[in-house]
Image (cartoon, helix red, strand yellow):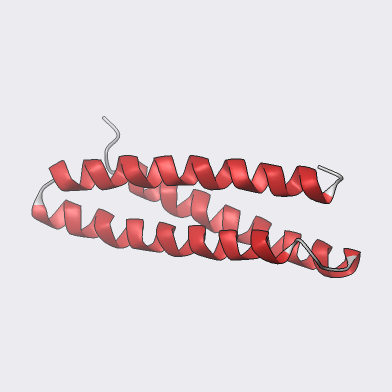
Length: 96
């Protein structure tokens, strides 16, 4: 993604995907046992925080200089990596 709009569009799609993944984990956590459900609940809360941080980064990209935009993009990519890591950990608890 070379353009700012293209990158924001990709970020918006990522946020939608993450919302669906979080909703899926919440449903699975509700049907899990108490201990596992509580553990997944904590991971879901972490995912929701990452999603919020990512959305804030997306909002800040609109009216920034190119240098600031590149820095914010790196920050957003770091948040995305942390989200993916936490999601894989949480989802693996439900793997067969």
